[in-house]
Length: 88
Image (cartoon, rainbow, N blue to C red; front, top):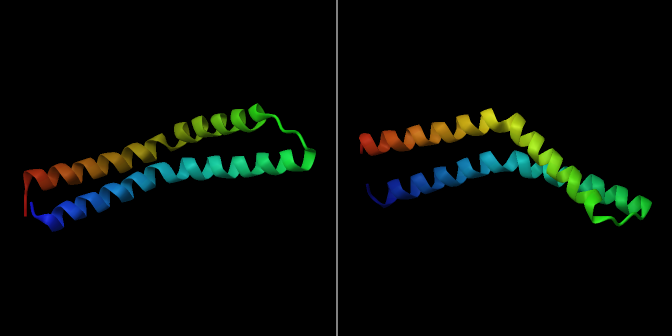
């Protein structure tokens, strides 16, 4: 395995990490922005008002997106193991 192969595996690992984490983080960001807007409009500055909905949305999105995350990670692992078994 040369330097180009190592860089290719590292690049693919970063892309897989972004694919797995981005949907959950985007949902949390959207909920956070909506809650912040509601708090600014109503002048309610309760910390749990922002925390609890974000946690619920993160858990629900992880449950819904778990098959996609598992398929993405499994595909990456299979490609990586294929490279180990058949170098070059």
